[in-house]
Length: 299
Image (cartoon, rainbow, N blue to C red):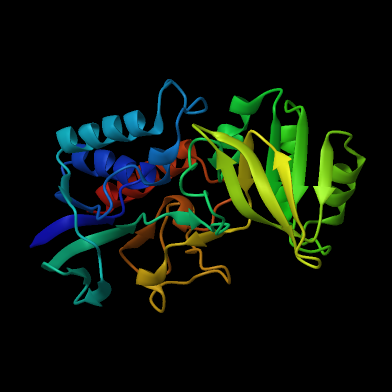
């Protein structure tokens, strides 16, 4: 089946692209094997998307409905292979093959998990992978950040603005964060650094109440009371589909220009899967709009 545009992924970036492509009168297929919303669906409450207050599930449902009303067609199929064929693009799924003049990759980036017992259970109920998204819900409370890079140290500093106490836990004594961030964290009276420890178990009832830490040298266990755990141990861009096709960074993010073009004609990337300085709902939605507008103008 042929389309003007195939969008692979249905988070905020893919849904936004679907809305704009549909409104432009382009025949648009959105492949959404895991439903719509992406990481947004796990956010209990959204406070930083302009003009909207509610849950991530509510926002993604509204965006999906708007995309459908705009004319986008959705299929719960996973793209297994992408290739260029005679000036167009072919996308193969288990059910068959689709072709399009343009393809937008909107597959996102998954947070790297801690692998701790209870992590999945408390996702969205005290376990978070975005301090700027969820930190404000823990004002005057105790929280824990796990990681040793710039993101972890920046998150700890950000949370220290309004949280009562911030534990910063890292598996060894060597930090990957910049010296400036390390010095700022060490000067903070609210941040307590704990090194050579890993998160073994996250505990609670309806929400997180405590964490079991294991010392990497002595294997000694300790329990820390905390209202939240912010994992900042990296993200994994879901760019396997274009590996060997489009230019990627060393971390696996897709390289684009300011119109969301990759280095391959007719292939775009939007949202968290691309190299970008900020990964938020509002920036992902903007990426989708930029790519769709460029496609509409070119077609």
